[in-house]
Image (cartoon, rainbow, N blue to C red; front, side):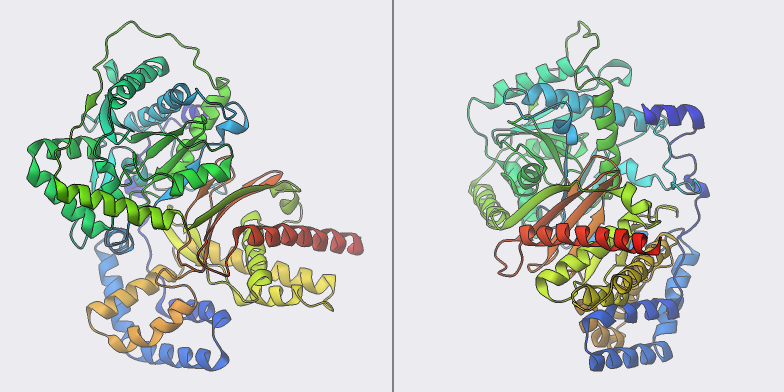
Length: 614
């Protein structure tokens, strides 16, 4: 397997480079303001833009330098000046329900090569999936997972997020939540060895690690699941897990009530929160990625513990997906694990060929909750709230197979920038205006770096979109503006990776301005911020989930927006799109239809221009 080969070649430990990673830099103040104005320009009138320029000038002549100095002072005593603020204000203070607002989903590509949808395979496939996921846990536990590096130059990337992948739960609180992480490497001490199994509104503790810290075999895991299933099927439980779909304040109150009712409830919550991950047996029957995403993002609220970093969903059709809390780590950590599992399954023909030891395992333990009428009402309210939003989600996932990365690279263009510009034109053609867009950029080459926001709707891409809708524009004009737009996107992405992008620095300046009551800046500029997508108002919420077979998806940020996660392979693009049905303007099928046409038009521009110039 590629990861094992890399490990042998490098001989390094997973977290050995952490202390040598450079600190996250603070972007220059003038540069931050220049980038802010750039991001606003495509979305405001000329008069509004002049006002924004004047506000920025006043800020730079007034409170700006003092606020920026405070960021620099903070950075002088921390290797990552942003980390604590980002975790608290971007995640832990988020008060809406996690599902359909913050959680992300992954769809296992395994049915494409070895596990076609088939009823009666759920537990067997789920057990084999869990086994390989536990092998990934073992790599982390023994610090043998190879360190991630940038493809170009081999720069070491921060691996801190992998510490919060297993045994991690977001616990609700009043005003602010907290993260509970029980994972430890072997050198750090003992680590939980159980998962939580959810079925028929009941929850079970299932041991999955045997002697010598070794995962038990897939047949043994399957037997553990069967035992839990037999215990669960006698009658439905109270459905306490549904409470994790509630608004965070309500869930915090319900959690307090559970602990107040019975000490056994506190024990059960602790077992769940420290478990390696959740495994959910689901009666849905998805048969492709689009249906998998619909079932994982907006399926039944029961038998999910939405606070877990990882919830594995094993469907009746034999397909597998995940629903993941975004708080502890970013999507690429989940993709890393999914790709590892995919490689292992392919290597072993999606079957188990090993020996099954003769041993007795601890039986599943049901986590019984004592409840009252208040809890039952809270469960009912949480489920109703969730179902109302879940019914509104529209979700598709399609493969564009006419060409992929190989074709784009043949013209010396960046595939990610190519897709981003295509998404902008597809939206422009459908809605007649540019879309404030968010793309995830990575800052993991810095200590505890996570992501930066790339505002991919630039003036350059808007100019290209306009030309593409003009009948008289020549092929060369279209190509020149397209290449210019792509180059601008590459510039912004490289800037984000270098830690010099402005979006999060700008957000922290806003935070400081509120904290220290510099209201002139915060109140004057915020309106324009929202026009360009700030404050969680991005119309296009996008992310590349890599160049592997493993796709991901999320719900839109705003009611009139779209979620668009995509993966890029040599000969195809796979795009997962979401929107809200209740919005009269949005349509994922129409947007994807425009995207297909845009991909075709972009190819024609490149090939026609190339033949003309030869």
